[in-house]
Length: 200
Image 1 (cartoon, one colour):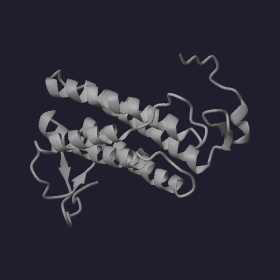
Image 2 (tube, helix red, strand yellow):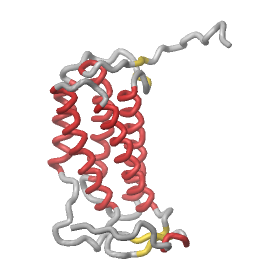
Image 3 (cartoon, rainbow, N blue to C red):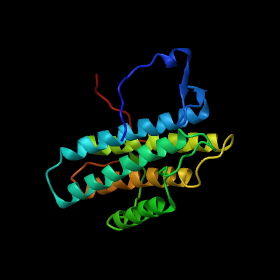
Image 4 (cartoon, rainbow, N blue to C red):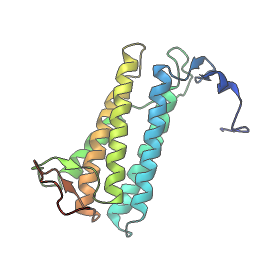
């Protein structure tokens, strides 16, 4: 059981934090930056869940909620995995797996199969849920880039980068699916759109 008694410890005042196992590191080291972005991504997915909860109850909304819950749980596990220095792993530590990556791929294929092929690029926005999904997608891409940077300096779990890569793809497909299944608006890119006239 996890028990947190104090929120602040003053140990970070010198710009340091501790990894899982107690190893001290500076807060701007690639490993800390990476799992910090995964935490940010989890918060962004939380915003997606809040926007989804505003939709009328339906099998699609509720199924999507369960998928988002699972994604948040796996992101928390991923953050803990990244917060553990190679060699400091502990028995029973949960890590993202090839099965998690396959689950995302299967979900992407099922939802994408319900959509018409894209004929233009999609712009973020259109509705609260759509905007939240695209924001989460861009944060996920950043987390993926930072995981790649980290992997060039230290070992990372074999499925870390594939999981983040598939999740960013999934978030894009979720936004397109939401436009069809949950009544979200979708804004398409218009090449050389004329500027607004008559305002202000």
